[in-house]
Length: 302
Ligand SMILES: Nc1nc2c(c(=O)[nH]1)N[C@@H](CN(C=O)c1ccc(C(=O)N[C@@H](CCC(=O)O)C(=O)O)cc1)CN2
Image (cartoon, rainbow, N blue to C red):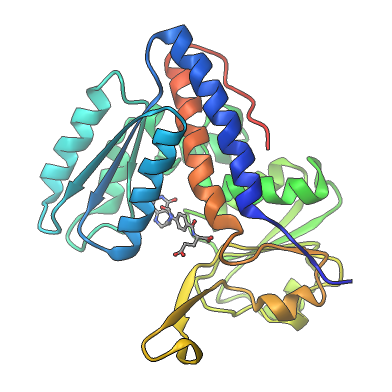
């Protein structure tokens, strides 16, 4: 049986529809919409696309949406001053500084400056700590990990008890938080990385395999256990001479067609985890708005 292709665009659309409804209710109750500010420093073309898409989805959800585009020459002090201004703005519930930042700016210092209550990326140490200590219901959770787990839940249901999850990649932004979220759902979790012994053999023990290494098509088909659910977080642009000179195509960290021979379900790239990242950013902004106004945390559905 060929693997089910998990349709991230369709699940993201359901999340966004729910966010839009709840944003209208919030606006009617509070006399203002949820507010999201996105900050871009420099002119990285991929970041420009992501920031534009975030602004478009924020507007579609009925949010107040602000974009701040600063030149690549911007100094850290100037960026910190903007973050301070957004922290103090009562109509802004979510602040996102698009990564990567240009060289010369200390990313950790910038992320630390964001008010944790407005940290819709979930990268501030307060939110990292809440998630790590099992208090995810009080935290703003990073968007890509939260979106990945929703896709897994759509296939396997809310409890992952008895399942072995292998997360390949130990980044603070994806690998570690996705592992925490899987643990919270009672999966048995192994975090693997470049120094893990016999990575293919370990991956073959995974009922749930999450690839977040940033290496194009590193996870091969024969690394996948028959019947596994495979979530590919990678977004890598590689040369595609078959499309013409200088052309590129997008691939994940998994060799999708090979893996689909063994897997029960797999996320495609594009159209898998990527769209969930932006949908969960809108969901986090709505959650931040509710918590800042003293309202109960909304239980979003997908
Ligand atoms: N502050 C942050 N910076 C970055 C994050 C983040 O979560 N917070 N994540 C990535 C980039 N990113 C969002 O910012 C992002 C990446 C990819 C997609 C997406 O929808 N991808 C599409 C394909 C897009 C394409 O054709 O290039 C897909 O997978 O279908 C959304 C958001 C780094 N920076």
